[in-house]
Length: 437
Image (cartoon, rainbow, N blue to C red; front, side, top):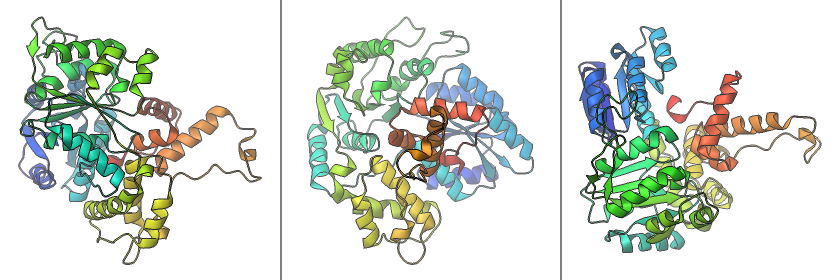
């Protein structure tokens, strides 16, 4: 991932930068907010902003919002002025990173910002067959539509295709269509010209141009508004884009990969997705099997995550016991690999002794209390109260991972975020996202 640091690299912030580099991040730096905005306009591959408190975090957040740039901002500073940290969060910073920096906290922030592990772990024959098909088409220029349930590793497979492609030396740029508000998504994709809208102070390059010569992944493309789909279709057909507010087409040389957790053809037939765009994207289709369909991967994935989160949390590595593997293999895994990852992360923190035993493996949210059995415990309660408690409990049980919780609940990430925003406004305590842990 690529991180923009706003502030001086002398002292503690420089140490934070060195830790981030050691954890695999690529860095860019700007001395002040104006130069930072120039970097953000020019480089759509930036994933995260670390902003020193002395730089007026609120003005940075507002400037980013005005120019419709979708990127999280983390405030950085000493604990000498706790009120400054609170003001930064209230102004829109995603999190506060105290200085001097803690390596494990920086690792957690980078992990949360990157969104997904990129390791491809395959031992089960069913998943191996899907990977072979991916490798067979990787060298081509064809668009690929990757389908599968949430949490199966669709982006991981997309990155594998890019690494095996003739474009492997070019950039790999991913855009989560479900995570970007509709009013920002067009600018994120195509960029914008100065004056295109209120707050557009200068030209900004979008994801298409950032991926020039490489691969652009449109993650969860089924969440894209139908009106924007028409502009995307033209870009794919003509191999050129129009920046928002622009009057001169820009030629692009980009291979498109797309993912979906829905039946996109059924969505097209229902009028929720353009059928012509579906066929343009679906030159080659790849289906990623659910974890339930590839139980042979569970042991290898569990060991991978056990090592990963022992390292992230500064804990000794403990292997997963055979009894725990048997319990994991018997689980239904509605959240797939993402749910397994969270389960092992939690087990790493709870484990005692030389192994991760069965006692450290907590599976899924608990059932709602029902003292007399069945649904009796719910009788007399309002529907909205039951829904609220279920949502908050599920988010808590997934360690604040909104994507995982939405998968378990069977709702979109956007719907979940709206619900949590409403509950917070009502004064309900909401579990923080992973980077706040």
